[in-house]
Image (cartoon, rainbow, N blue to C red; front, side, top):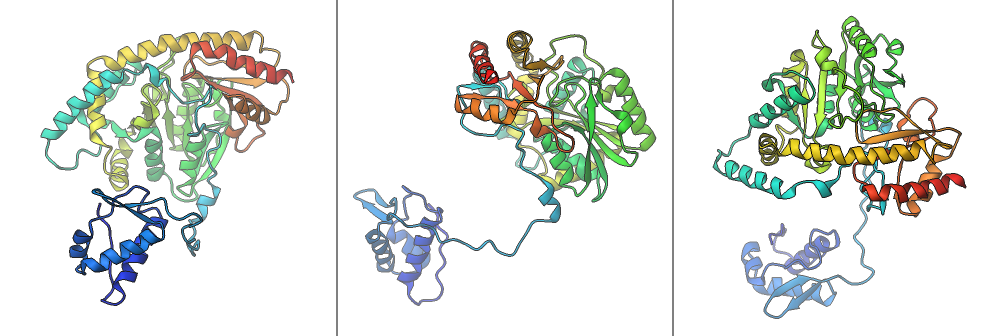
Amino acid sequence: MELQLILDGRHDLVGQLYRQLRDAILHGRLATGDRLPATRYLAERLEVSRKTVSEAYERLASEGFLEGRVGSGTFVARGPAGEAPPQRADGPLRPAARWARIEPQSGLMDQRAPLRYSFAGGTTDKRRFPFDTWRTCVLQALRLQQRSPAFYKETEGDPELRLAISRYLAINRAVQCDWNALMVTQGAQQGLDLLARVMLDPGDLAVVEEPGYPPARASLLATGAEVRGVPVDAEGLRVDLLPDNAKLVYVTPSHQFPLGMPMSLERRLQLLDWAQRHRALIIEDDYDSEYRFDGRSLESLRSLDRNGQVAYLGTFSKTLFPELRLGYLLPPASLREAVLAARKLVDRHSETLQQRALALFIQRGDFARHTRRLQREYAQRRRRLLERLHGDLSPWLEALPAVAGIHLAARCREPLDVLRIARHLRQQGLEVGTLPPFYAETPAQAGFLFGFGCIERDDIDPALDLLRAELRR
């Protein structure tokens, strides 16, 4: 392995080398089991005698930091018991004041070890993903990448993927767009961040739904903007309560997050009319409407927009898997160049191998087959979940109407400490979300969030039995 070692002058060379190696071990730059360079090689590199290196190694070995293995070399040992790396002072630097307003996203499931039963929201069933097919697409993409020049690629994303996405949107979402207008992003969250960067100055007012998606609020706050939550009702965002000076409105009209209701057509038209009168941007986050279970889908805000004031966000996290980190953004034409410039400053473009693999996955028809299979499976899970919510769980919970997506919300009929209940259930091996963390400004309604993307059908009943037992207490 290569070590960055710098000797100052010719004084106490053994001591200098000893201290630098010991510091590297204590701070984790050299880990247990790492093989150190041979004494002859390191001596030549540092332009010192081999005896100098050997003495430093022997001193570290005597203290338990290194061990020699006959015929193999010198390795980092576990280190002497009780040794701890020296603590550094915090230092004088502090983040900009606006970061103090951005709270940890406690409403979302984190990366804790999975429990026996999980109603985690925003997750998909990787057990049903065709990884053998995906591997074929990745290998083909790798061969194509091997033959391409070693230059940066298009900031907007792989042309083949953008073309595939545009066709997919036209067929499945009735969103007509020129593929050249699309941008591939690192998930929908990056698309939101880019739009916030180009639209908002510090002190500007942005609007989110209340309750709503915590990372959206956080992205807008990070620009230095003021963020205000506007309540939702059975038809979606209360357009009549929008402040006149808002420059940006973020909404989830197909499947309101987290409550689940779709925005009515009348409310969509009201929102577009409001945006035209106030020259504001609407960000439409269509995060999981691939899965529709009841009724006909309503036209997207983007499809209804005639004035170029809607930006459309989408993601593959809910159809493939979240760690793929691929999404897309369709900005208004008037913002496209600014969004493109912002993207070049952030990371220039997304990783290209998985972009081309996804393009192949869509072009071959594998994506459509995969989503159809998941649609059938999720429909059965959703049906059983609703049967229980309308049945033996109905004395405590009221399922909120939702026609699409892979989570359902249920409101408590009487005041309950849902956070305490969720903690108790977690101790019993059940993960379930709650509604209060998604309220930022108004009194929270007690309720639960049931994601059914990753729980097996056969696990739904025993999981809900645990919930019922807890509710009875």
